[in-house]
Amino acid sequence: MASPFKTRNDRTDMPELPEVETTRKGITPKANQQVIKAFIVRNASLRWPIDLTLKQKLPGLVIQSINRRGKYLLLKTELGTLLIHLGMSGNLRVLPENTPALKHDHVDIVLENGYLVRLNDPRRFGSVLWHSANEGSVEQHKLLAKLAPEPLSDEFNGQYFYEKTRNRKVAIKSLVMNSAVAVGAGNIYANESLFMSKIHPQTMASKLTEKQCELLVNNIKKVLEAAIEQGGTTLKDFMSPDGKPGYFVQKLNVYDQAGKPCPVCGTPIERIILNQRASYFCPKCQKT
Image 1 (cartoon, rainbow, N blue to C red):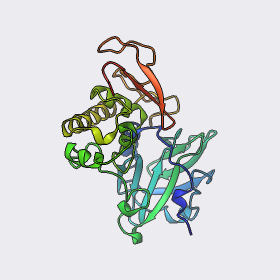
Image 2: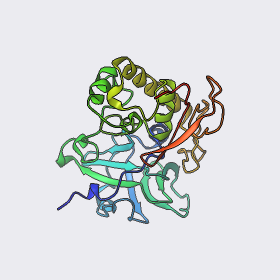
Image 3: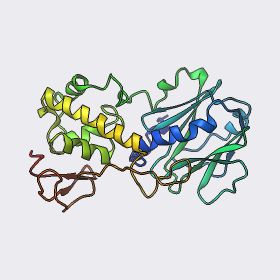
């Protein structure tokens, strides 16, 4: 039987990693170390069907930790871990327990402290999955096992990335967005980090020097750290846990800036489609 986790193309790059990390930080104060009172499912038909037996399994369990792996939020309990992905339009909010549900409010994790964690997902590309403790570490889950090292970790470094680019006859932007090679550099941040590194998005990955790989990795870290610090990029579909839009104070240099002057040289920013994604670059600063 084919794995259910390969039935749909993984095109869920919004919200991006900084928004997910902002969400993790937002729900942690009210949800971490709290007892689950109820698990309410209004619509189980997300990217993959929600296991409805969780309505019996989860009540009484303590949320022992709230972590993130890539774009997945991991809510660990004694019996297993909930893996939550926000898809393309989802958000988690912490609300008072008696807050009426609105359209697209599909799942509530009700806590005994009088709050609930609510998943709202208009497009239903998000997911709520369960990894039992009997199956081993959650890192062994099919959706996590092949992920690259976390982008802000020491394991993600120039030498690692240089080795991954050898003999890779693919555009560097595509490789940066390959979660088996680099986690977290979605379309916005891939565009920005390549601009900061003066690397054209269509440059063949195998042509990058070790020095270029070191620079690119450092800039991926910088742009993600800045976004996390400032709350995430403003996306019309993203809402932070307190119900206010996410934001990214730092001015985006090239993303969605087609026709506008490059902030470095003044040359108009250009836009191309690369692997069905919009790519933005300065033709003067980022030569092929």
